[in-house]
Image (spheres, rainbow, N blue to C red):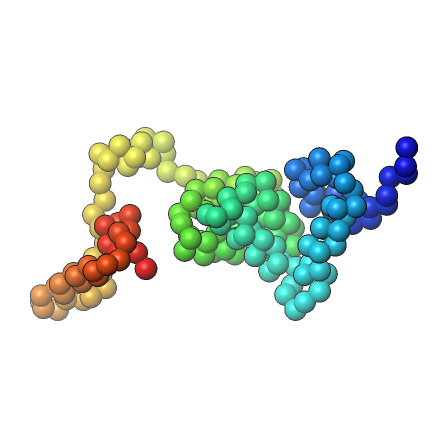
Length: 181
């Protein structure tokens, strides 16, 4: 049986807790391939002007993006970012920025963020009581839409509220009933 090739990058990723368990099978089948992949993946981690914390925040965004939704990667990079000094607010803003792709990012990432904050011994805001959530989900406690800034200003001045903009023609419908941009 041939000797197993040396895999210093693989060993380093495992040692620092940045190893994806999904790579175990690839490592068993072809350790040289995973080593080459990690060498490629490691270039921006070793070089460049961005501090490690910012790199981890970017990796959180990639892993929670609607097109990816990879919970284990999100969890790993949130934990790394917290160890590097990221705040709950920085992580939440990173997650919020991914909602430009879709709200699913928040649905995946916020529960993970709360778990990682607890693991790191950081405060976690309390969720509303279950009854309040159930009422909102059932629609028994509808919330009025907040007026636009222009409508609020008009209400305070006695002027008529501005008319809602007419929908654009030819655009696809967004979930809110308007046109998507």
